[in-house]
Image 1 (cartoon, rainbow, N blue to C red):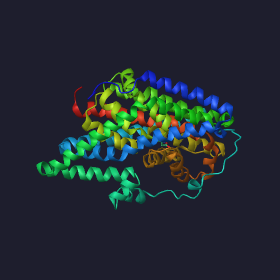
Image 2: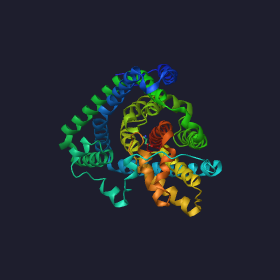
Image 3: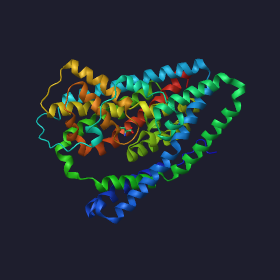
Image 4: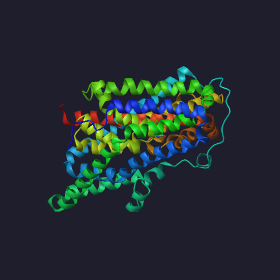
Length: 408
Ligand code: ASP
């Protein structure tokens, strides 16, 4: 098998981006969504995302079972606790960074904005309590969790099965072999899908750019600037520095290896759909051993969302500023923790962060209707925050490789 060869050439992926954006602009200019061509492009994009999603459930399950069954319990505990601390601290840092940026830029002060009507799911949603979050970790019926692609529940179930298999030792070797073979098989499918990446990216970007109403961006330009600026600092400075200092991997090598995953994240706005690509990049191009990436990445794609966390903080503060409500330091500390929780609770699917923001707004008594103010540009911001989410997961895997091995 082609263990260390790039399946998809970066040059082709970049061509896909350029073609997608240029063709999307033309499509937008020619009439956007009303054109029949738009329907064809949209269908093509959907097919690509579905191909990626098709492998997620078997991939996540077999990855985690294989990692938990294959590692000795000491190593597993070490990897688990390091991963937990790393994910939590980088997410908290991202929120703090978002708060710093939004306090400096003050994008909402004096903004005269029109609020859009909220989608029903947001308007009527009760934010989950901590007890709900805890309860939802454990699937009452694993088959049901698999059918609903409930990632958190699938993670819990897979870890429990993996640890049981680990303790079963020799007696579980048939199941272990089966799991490993399903994992290999899923990765073969991922390789096929990856070959379509440049086309998929072009179609998805063409769809997004083709249907964008550019005029809505203007009044929100400063808000977008604050979110994108914060994401740029985190994605281009903080994470590469961590990868360099803690992971001993030069940033250019890291970006080169992980770029297909970043582009997939940008075009799909979904960490989960990107997961197969992230796994492939991290294992093959960045040389992270399978037992580490199989553990860190599925968990990361579900709970580690630095980009979403940063965005939640900026968005909540923007809404406060736009309504003329000032939040003192204590309330901003509440934002720090609730935005972290909201990012952990957000699923790795498009717009998930927008829905979990209700948790942050309610915690500091901000009007939920405020979400209407930022709805118009959320689609675009989702692309970039998902990119940082995926970058954070890959960075975590590289750092864990170094930290848990103690060597290079
Ligand atoms: N789309 C993001 C992701 O999949 C979640 C979000 O909406 O922020 O990572």
